Length: 498
Ligand code: FES
Image 1 (tube, rainbow, N blue to C red):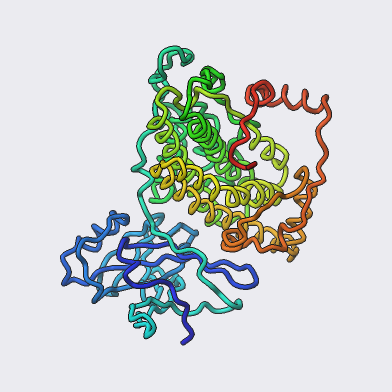
Image 2 (cartoon, rainbow, N blue to C red):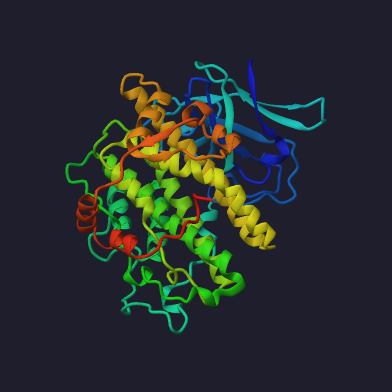
């Protein structure tokens, strides 16, 4: 049996579940879940306990007697993500119970009592004679050439752990905090969302960034654990996303004398600007769901899982960055410096087409993030701010997976449109929807990990013209406060343009 190496066994001891992504030479993807269970003789929690505590590292476990299974990440019934499946032992063996409709699948055979079958892959553990380490391998998938592992990451509940962002009422004296507001609940008292589409639009319309983060966590958790089993994109009454997500006025004022930030200036300004980008990134992930879900009825559930996970990651990034900002510069919390909305300009330009949106936002903007993050990390390292370095490294690793999702769904839509070549299609989209060169230097290695080989982006130039003054005024009037803000406040060129 032909095998693919997954990992050293010891590297799988930190968690019980891992997302695996494989990509073939043709650009096809397989999303899989690896379940690592313990045998009954170990002193670990029961199988069902572990199912609810997927992120908890194992204490003092030996590497013997492991049960390791690999199965498709999407349930064959209606496509639920199986990463939060419950694991149970019964007469038919060890089964994974889908969080949506509770169909059960044998982790070895893939069979369900319902008659459906999911794909499972044989797993082997072998000692590598070169280094004496035990390595875990899985069966090679059928179809496709040169499959390789491009992502292995733990299924984690860590998103619940980042320190809370600083609430706006804690802004220091002298900084305007806007009108005092009644605390708005995470779940609205009336007309609480019942579908993913409704949550997406509610979150897009939530101006307070902290509430946006809380709602994102809640909606993602509900969706992943099967408490929100409806995507709702095929409903004729699916809600419309806003043209531009609103922002609290108090977050759009330049209220601080930046010269007073002194030696913390560079780091604080940069953290503030990065947090602003993350706030827009949360909206971008929900917007792609809400805007294009109702237009493309054939989008599989995996699309909605990928972008919900992306929204969750971005909200984690926002919380981590605002917490670091509060730690290193308490006098300049989030909301106290100028912000810009330039990322949303690309969202507006691509609001007519999913293919354009994926190309410009996820394969140009986000891929540029991969290029510049290492230099940003280096700057924090030089400043001796190792806590922020750790945060930035988490963000960078997540961003590679976001570009991978962009590539995955871009190639998917190209295939749907009659086997359009993804490289040609991407270059055509950039010509239409981008101004100027796709700038290097490129992080070739991480771009390649995400599926962006050099032929996608080398020697590429966008030919989109600059809007006329009339068009700009028209856009500003149409879209309201955020664009007005962007034109009034000097944008901080931090994040993409080193
Ligand atoms: S049982 Fe898994 S989606 Fe329905």
